[in-house]
Amino acid sequence: TTGALFGALNLAENAVGVTITPGSVPDAPATLVLSDDAMDVPLVNRVTTTAAGGHQIVWPEMRPGETALTITGTIPVDARPARLRVAVGNPTTWFVRALKRALVAGGISVSGDAVDADDLPTAARAAVMDSTARTLFVHTSPPLTEVIRPALKMSVNLYGEALLRLNSGESGPRTNDQAVEALTTRLTTWGIPPDSVQLVDGSGLSRRDVVTADAVT
Image (cartoon, rainbow, N blue to C red):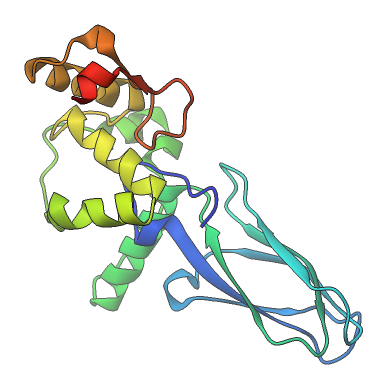
């Protein structure tokens, strides 16, 4: 998946599946079907059907902050269904929508839409972030020995960014700056001088991520 965003809440690598089936005749709109875990993601269909043997090109568009996923392009009338794996826009919104679906499926009534806490009014957001809030459920992820495999073997950058944020502790905002600062402190306790390491993200994509050979040794 290209361009998957990351956050403090992540689910299914923050990506959804989309199947694009051509219309029955040229110039007809194609049919879009989302994977079962994303049926409530709003879709904008801009894929048209072209003549048999034509050129197929379909691509997703979902900019940060947008709620709708747009699929654009063309697909020949005689083509097999095309399948895309598309990054979701807001990872937190994606997560809480899935949580709402799970609660409803479990027989728990949920009123209102699932929303990102960052989008709530100030007073409501403060209530959500209140340290006296009661924990209802705790989910434990697989151990690091399992999580690290897709991060390193399959180079899933999302895992690296999520793991970086674990350095910010069990509570409090999991911002990039706080996580990098905490990781630098951790490395210092391991005897690695702070001036031998410069880290700015968890994926290593930034050209500003540099480590001396002595620090690696």
